[in-house]
Length: 383
Image (cartoon, rainbow, N blue to C red; front, side, top):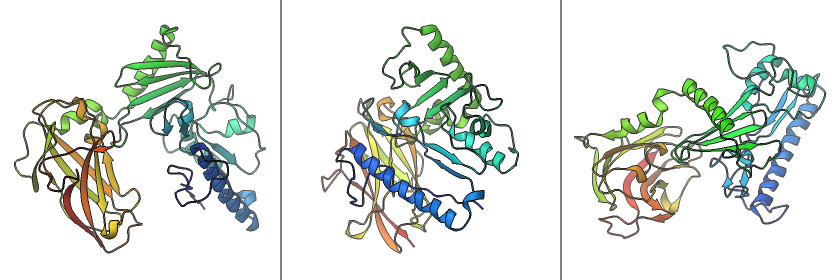
């Protein structure tokens, strides 16, 4: 049997239910309180396994999908950089027959798949760069253990544009050397994690040959692994139209100065929980701008009823084509999808509203009879 338990409370926003922080008022104190709460829930699970006599033949793995930043490099939260505070993750494995120990060697979260199959005496269905952690768990260190890792193993991290976050960064670690590639800016940073674990001293200028060599390894990996349909240039070209569509289901003529919303397509307006709401907007660029506009689609029900994460906050074209790169006269297609959450109450009718933000301030548009900077896009019905 398999149980997947997702403890989402160790995530922004911290303590949203009003729980008191056990450690102080700072964000990191609230974060630590969330960790304490998660730890208690894990304890309940382990106790339940023991009570039922399942602890002797059950594998328990506790892991996180990322770390969290608290200003170490000027950022908070995650999904903004590839510094250690954001990409280092928790990984604990408890398995029958293995002696508890601490492993200091670097491993990867994707190593969990072959590890679980190895513990279940099952082969990997196809070749993979991931490696079973069983040798590490037996030896206590991956260095020199056949098939478990070693100083020459490459670890890749990526931060891809996803609409909400426009960042495009990649990082590679080989031994103690770590290189971060800020793809769109064309910048690289090189760190020696053995002497500089907090990544404060960029060595790329002092050792350009090593930086070039490691960047070459990273570029080779990108070339071998990238899907053509996800490459930045191809995505932009696909959604940069030669002319406005001949027919748009909901035509508009809403001017924001730098661009005009010509309208949008929306195949249907009735949905159920779990359905996908699809909308496609069309913009005409009136003039080039230095403002990086952020598009905020909100769904609001009666009495200002809202559902957490039921929205579409994004930069245009899923983050691939920010407004700072738009050229005068271009016609841009911007597809947006929103999943109806299972937590929404039904039946309910909700308004769809669009706000275009710059530095968190709503951008005025014309015509706007109410002068609020909120463009109403009609209603949807969730049954």
